[in-house]
Length: 255
Image 1: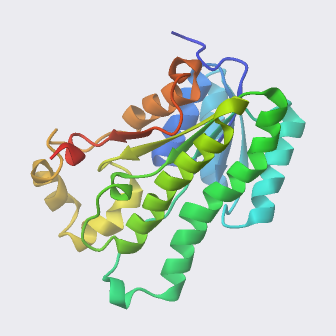
Image 2 (image 1 turned 180 degrees about the horizontal axis):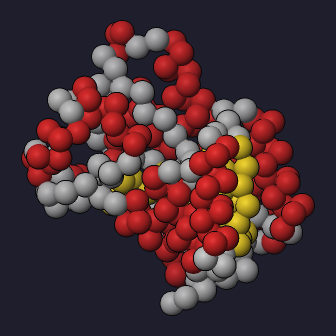
Image 3 (image 1 turned 60 degrees about the vertical axis):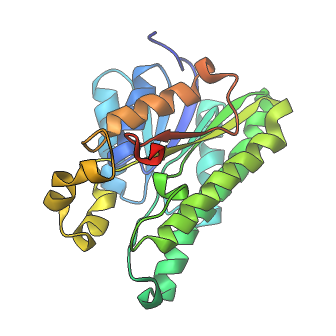
């Protein structure tokens, strides 16, 4: 199965840690040239360096995806440097939990600007390059909270629900033009983005001790498990899938 995305060029946002980092590494393992993009410059570089150290092909970029100009510049530079943009993984996001009536304007704006607008800006910039080639795969990272919500996550859930519908819209618009767009809805995965929410629920240890009460598989997911799904959706193995919203949630939404 090696080389499933060989020769393709991928941009992965939020590649400095968690699911984004694992996805960048997984795509590189299967032959892609990966642009590791993250707001944390040193983290993006560390992921790229890790890929390069194992003879993979990668570079890095520091970017705040809430900046539309920065998104366009990243895509144009990637196309100029490597000749195409074949895979876009819109993974970067923020989770800023809170009691809704106490949530600040800044929290609402930051959540929507990163989680929704960032994905839109990058997708808009990437599609013309995919159209030139007549192919492309966009993988959007939604969340189980794009399908069901949890306490203290009203704003986050709204942003991830928007990604679900954005995915379906893009899939329909470009279905006959060779561009596929799918979304992943992870359940509770062991990544730092969940730590603030865990604190509001009684702490990370408490969440993990009681995780089988809401995630039937009885454990958190791993970044690598989600990255394997990213690879599948990015590759031609999923060539009949577009507009799909794929839950990887340990059975959470099966209840």
